[in-house]
Image 1 (tube, rainbow, N blue to C red):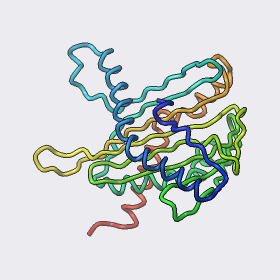
Image 2 (cartoon, rainbow, N blue to C red):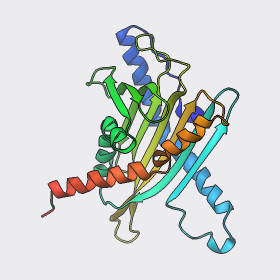
Image 3 (spheres, helix red, strand yellow):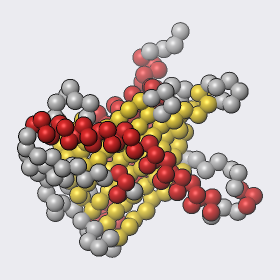
Image 4 (spheres, rainbow, N blue to C red):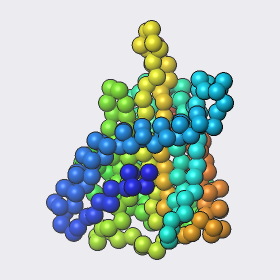
Length: 255
């Protein structure tokens, strides 16, 4: 999952070349992220089905939440796959709610985790690619990460991809931070009635990977796992999205 979602895009100092590199990143993201989410969500579903008894095979697999801790040579990964149904009938409105979720990162980080999060835009607001620096300080390990967000809404799905830029001479990030970066991939698809074709809900599939410069037996990993569990198991994004969608319905009541 780490190799699939982390493109290792490198930026230079020249403004034009920086934007060109971000646009190449953007094109690759739109072209590959949906299939990446499908691939790893299917792995997670297969794991559930393999553990089931034969009589339970046809039962629904969602909501699904799988969290893993993986130890590597000199770092650790905390990863998660989450699949759930959002009880809403508009794909575009769920897409807008997720857009707002990412825009409001400082707000919900403070509200839910007591973490002071500061975000600074690093490229032009006119660009289709959103590139920002996020500084986190509070409960858990502090972090400074340069994030690039790519997203797209089509008639059949919506997608979001947050990657980390670790090589940027204009905005360098410390390579020795305990939390090196976090990655995120989201795909939303409408669930429709077979007879009428009407949307009954929106399926949210969420992948997340955090890379730590620590070994998996470090006590900080255990603490971090508990600190970010609401992110990993989908509780946070589900709660925030439903809140946004409810606000939207109340402010724009249907006639």
